[in-house]
Length: 115
Image 1 (tube, rainbow, N blue to C red):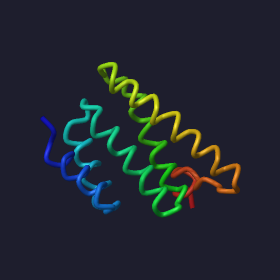
Image 2 (cartoon, one colour):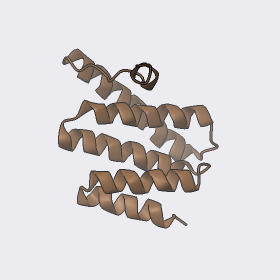
Image 3 (cartoon, rainbow, N blue to C red):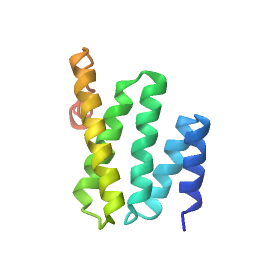
């Protein structure tokens, strides 16, 4: 059974409410960090928001979620493993294309907070 946050986040993605969707899906991820479904939905929300807003910085956020999910090594059934692999490759490829088009990623948080 999906959490209320996950259901709400998916509904908000369908409605194009990117801020609300990302917030709800982040809460869903935090509420049950062992469930990969909120993580995957959050990746898709960032990708959809990046496309809708023409904002590659949102792709960077999707990439950060991809890496976090990969590093957690959560057990996933084969269908979710395939979904994650597809999302990981798709986000990576979109970031490579954005960089080739002249986009520069934001500096790491550590560099920003040094000053």
